[in-house]
Length: 259
Image (cartoon, rainbow, N blue to C red):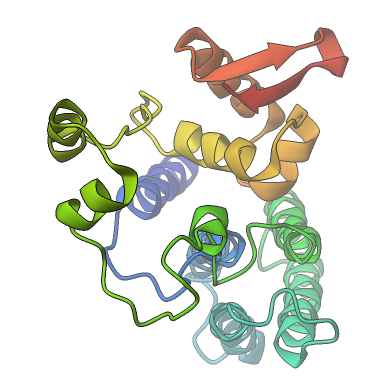
């Protein structure tokens, strides 16, 4: 009965964390730090769940919970330093993850939690550490995103304080005809289609392919460790079916790219 109750609570926590969308995001364009934080949130919730029955006076209960909260704080602090070599914030979060794993193992040996739950949670924290290490080499781990178009457009001089030219200025500079002016005035910028998916898996995979270019399933999985390779494969199949992604090769040599 307790197992059924715990499983139900676990599913409720997972549904709440996965589906709750917040408008506030302190990570800017640093998608990797944002995913690391999201992953850590789930692990902290699971840690609190498996330690709720431990006596409140037990020191390791408080130490473990405090350690997981410090992991969240450390990830927030590294949002602008993920690409910095030897950054203290990155070293701190990796140290806290290792300390957390040690305490989870101690709980299992002491009989406070099952070895099965301890193994699952320890592996999940270890995957978080590996994700952060791999994220340091990703192009999605920067908080500032430069646009090639903005840097290449020098038609109006190098002064960054220039005002946006009016339609009349463009007409004068390009000697456009009246018909061309009408098209320019009434045209609507092209917006690429978004993946049609109830969750955010397809959008995450699509964003990775857009930034990384040609990638295999394992390359994609590095950036989203919260999803299994089977789940990623299913989402890629949907994206290919929608005509948003192109598949090259076959079987384990398959690679994918944005169409």
